[in-house]
Image (cartoon, rainbow, N blue to C red; front, side, top):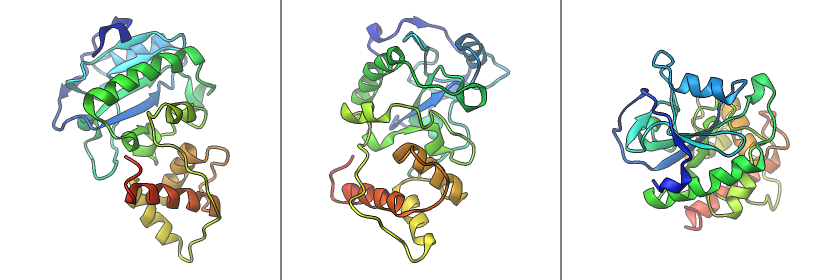
Length: 234
């Protein structure tokens, strides 16, 4: 880790050894009323949760768990065949009250602090942009974070996340099952199909998150798969 990216270290006891190399970054919101409450919980042995980093709304970056260790941020989750996401990922918590306590936009100072940290992690671990994901992507039936207000477009502009493709035409499936199989092929757990669809919408079409399959959503997924299959998306 580049030291200048870190403002302080507050060691969390909640970690164990990795069982896989780092190939992902998972972005979260803290979902608590204050950053102090979130930090206390992330360091509480009884809570059994942690992350590698926490960034407060003013842009302070706190290191909690060394990247060489397995932090406990993902819970039961799945992405592109990976079931032990904690072992394979670096977890970053963004202080935000979340949907339960007054969800609000992420301040510019917070995103400004995230960007160089994320870029550094991606470069050091050679992480594909497709593996920079939100908690809702890897646990769609349980989580909504970092949510529809997170500034994915800014990450995309800097090459830190897959760009959102334009739906060039509406695409309709005769059988909705075909869409869910395509969604699974892209990387999502489709055990709860509607939850997976909402997670996809939250990331790729946040203007409408209703869990309903429509031509625009299907077209976006088609473009994402096309980009990947033609070698233009990593």
